Image 1: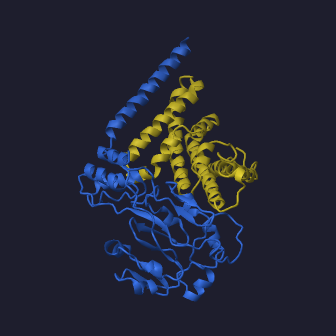
Image 2: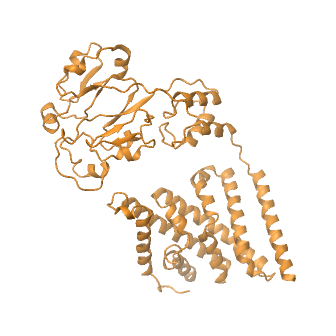
Image 3: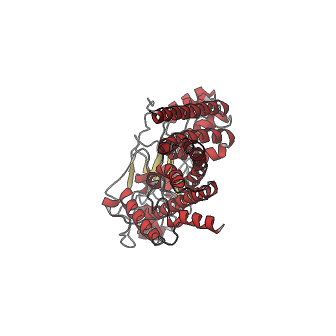
Length: 193
Length: 278
């Protein structure tokens, strides 16, 4: 139990996927302009990576390892995740329209994102068991959510600030992200797996 | 060689399996969308202004097709032509859209309105309004930092050197976005063809209002007394014109000449010639 908790906290804070591993930066900047959109994005990412990385783990351990084709991992995962997100979109559209309306635009944005590919790859490279990989993935999703919500609340405050003309918009957002990453650096070394 | 063959087979199989799953899901989870919704959406101007009361053009298109109670004339920027097309597509009778235009209820340019303090913060009315209700001595007037100008989805507003925004009647679609964003509620939507407008929003008593701004409406009531049609009423020390009565009855407004501070002015803008959207 303690091991799983450590893994979860490490994925959320210490090895935060956005702020220490610098994955998923494109949606991190793209969808962090307001708080509610970033919350939706955080939840959508968590759901998608949890499901897709579980599937990826199964494919890796049941198909690729027995066939000695582990060098194909990246390619197979790309295909797997892209088609899985499509499938997820169709299913939510049919079965839970409310959820679809909330996720709709974000789902396809996620399909080809590096954080969604990076998490399952790190899972299999670290030789996690299925349980561990699920916990690690949920942690990664929550960590992404925390990062993007923090960023969105900062950027909402920034709207009323007197930003130098040259830095308006993305410029100051990058500086902010750098400072956030610096502060997350303070957690580094707390947990080592 | 054998590995290469294996790779080929695995990737081919993977492609086929995923493709089949997706094809199956596409049939199994197909959601029937009324094709009319797309046609209606294409007819809308796509300013996404929300003047119809829905989240955007797509949301309105869906509502107007699926819900028989939603009228086809809610798109204010689209005016008559769009309402006609939407009405035709959905089979609903389209009552005329009442065209309207934004009007700034303030004539307190930087020379006329007394400043309370010098504001040197962010160039934004909302921010200025947070500081003691803005830099003008008058609590009700336009602050002149152009929040409405920045938010106009159609580029119809410009900030004049006098410190007041100007509405281009050719470009203004009457969507009302500026009315919503103005922290002073100094913008109102006038029906096109309105004859006179009160260019003041001050609810202060006459003496107080006059001290703050030489263009203020004093609430003296001369205009109301002189209007034969009863179109003007004084409410909270401010003249309020009912444009409907004006348009219907009045040919020769007497109120303009009577106003001691020239707070009532004729609306010079000609009714905008409606252009059919291509």
